Length: 409
Image 1: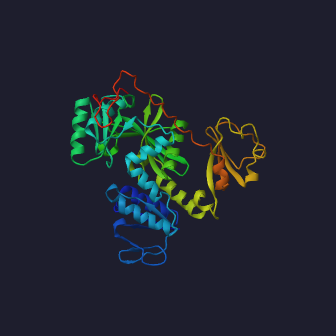
Image 2: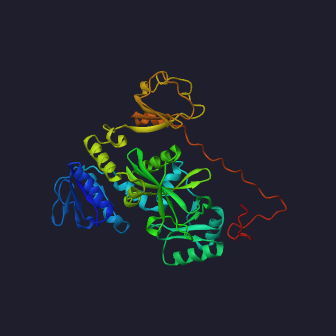
Image 3: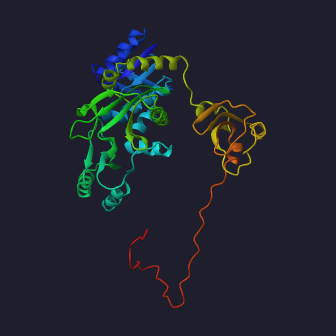
């Protein structure tokens, strides 16, 4: 197998370890400077130039893209994808993880617990935003910060308002996040490869510091992950579209709280803390995937017009409840059930005799129009009845402003 590692730092620990692990396994590997690529869109097929010459064939590409070149780096990875070169971290996955706001929007949509967070732009909205996340102290984060840079703990409301106002005045976008006091300056880094956590460590901040990043002088120790933490880490990485990721979690009172999903996790800290060959696990995973790649069924199964993949929820009151898959009539509608998800259990290729229950989720392939008919119509919001003023009340002039501009809610 021929692997390209996209990195501007060939002497960095992570790049050297990945290169060595690939060569130890008999693979050919080259470290390519991401900024030396030219994206060639002049021909009939997608292509890449490297240092002014036609790029040779590669079986897989492993992106190690720094935050400062995210836009161009994502474009290069996207071009590799167009050329059908396997990458464990897709261009969309890298883009999702690099934008902190976008990342937590995606995670919260999929029921991954995160610290209470808000994002505002208007100065008048800052104080209500601080109150919504539980009040001071709060953590203020730059959307583009890395390695703990651009993360500030504001001990009280006035300091928080001053910091946010200063950052916004310099055109910086900031998140306001609840401070999780019970974490006591520590977090967990889980390194996900594929569908499992291959290594995990606990990071502790230095005295007087709340950021536990190793780059900020934090200490590390090996940790045996609770199954719930492992599940959340793997699920978070896969939701983001990443097969290799460092998932940072706080140990909250009610379980894991995801802070960040890193698409280019450093290997030095976690290999040193755990004494595990994480680089080797990454190369082995890429080798397996190149030989037998996972496919995006949403794209690959849509082979003819009108057919595709969709997820159907067996909602309360549905005609499907209490019926087996054979009795449901799905097959008569040219719909095949690929998987059935019940709670946290995924049942691939379920038997026709399996009886459907409320809240089951069915991943189906078939005629899109037929599947659309099974989705309940969205409930329309009921309009509030118009209230006529009493006879002795003056009818308000629609052109004049209200006497009080205060929302009691």
